[in-house]
Image 1: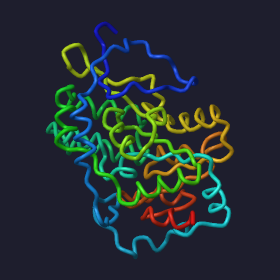
Image 2 (image 1 turned 90 degrees about the vertical axis):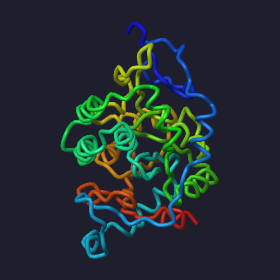
Image 3 (image 1 turned 120 degrees about the vertical axis):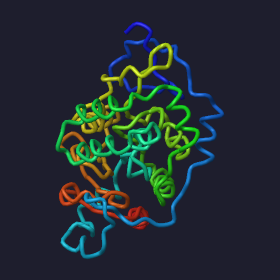
Length: 294
C-alpha cells in the first residue's frame, strides 16, 4: 500500500514460518525516551479481586462449582515438564485490556469495551471485533505515543516472578496476544522476553501518522490465530510439551492437537465462566503456579 508504515519500537525477528512483510520496513520508531518511560512508570498492584462477566467482583460462593481449581496429577506433570509456556497479555500478563485503555484515552472507552467483552467470550469472530473496535476511534500515531507515555502498562502481580522461575527451569516463554506490538514490546522488555517471542497485531499508520488499519498478515488478527501461532511455534522448535495461559476464548482455542497440550485459565483479573469451565486448571494467583514448580 502506497505510503503505508507501521509504528513500532523494535523490528521483530520473525520465525521462518510467517509471511514476509509486503510493506516497507523503513518506518519511524517510537522514541527511546518514551519507551524507557513506559518501563519506568509501570505500576504493580498488591492484590486483586477477580471481576466476573457481569462486571461485578466475585466472592467465594461464585467459584464453588468449579472442579478445576486444583490440578490433577496429569496436569501438574505437563505443567512442570513444559518446554514452552505461552501467555496472553491483556488481563493476564497485564492488568489492562490494552485496546480498551487506548480507546478510553481517545474518548471511546465504553463502546470499545462492549466489543471487547463480545470478542473475549467468543460470541463474534475476533477479526470482526478487532476491526469494529478500531473503526470506532481510529487512533493516530501521535495519540498512541501520547498514550504510551501517560498510561504505561500495569503488570499483573506475580507474573515477573513466575517468568523468572520458568526461565530458571529452561522453559521458553512467549507472549501471544490479540493486542498490539507497539503496546506489548515495553512489557516484554521489562520481563526479559525477547522480541522474537512476541506474536501480536500491529497498528498501521499513513505517512502523516493517520490510522489506516492493522496488519492482517498477523495470525493473531483473526479467529483461531493464537492457536495457529502456538502450532507454528511448536513446529519451528519441535517442542514436546506446551502450555497456554490466558483468560479468553481465543486462549482456550490454542489447546488442540499440534498446539498447546494444556490450557490454564487465569481469572485473577477477568473471570469468564464459559472459558474457566473448560480449562485444565483455573488459577487466580500466579503464586499458585510458582509454588507448583518447587
